[in-house]
Image 1 (cartoon, rainbow, N blue to C red):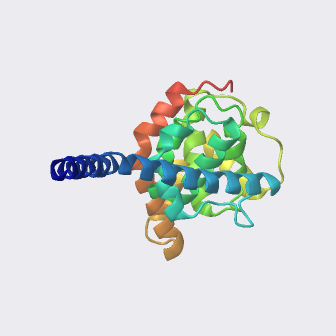
Image 2: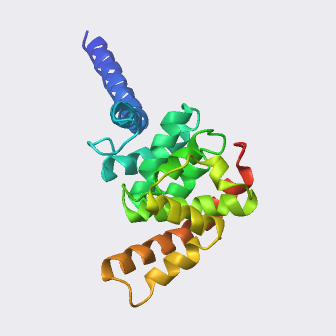
Length: 219
């Protein structure tokens, strides 16, 4: 009887040890899975709000910076999502600047038919001057490879800032324009923002080049 109890106790100890081992091995997997489920809910909720606001970030549709850092961990999972969601995430990345890794998101949108219109929508600076500059840099590089009539590509607008940006793009002067603002003589706030965007351009230059080379949208 005593031997039977010892055997049962030993078996129980083995089962507990195996269970602990399985938990140890698979815990990171389940933690990542739960993290992705949570962050994907946030993406879907913010995307839905963005669509309800007519593709506008005003009203809280933008994903918080800390949450978007987690989205970036699962960037590959979004490569097969709809064009709208991929464009929404690219715009979030552009909003977040260097931490948003917007250069990486560009290359998830090479076949997105609407991405150019989304980038165009940022040129009016309503979402901030840095977003307008980032967008203009991307569009300028596309224009260099695919010289076309910008007036045919984008809708006519009376917005002065948008038209000024389009003129810079057609003249291939976006980088020169931002560089001038980054130099002494410009207001300190604009000076800092210009230097920030130029630094991002240097960081993501290869990603931009890759995006332009792989761009499959008919311009």
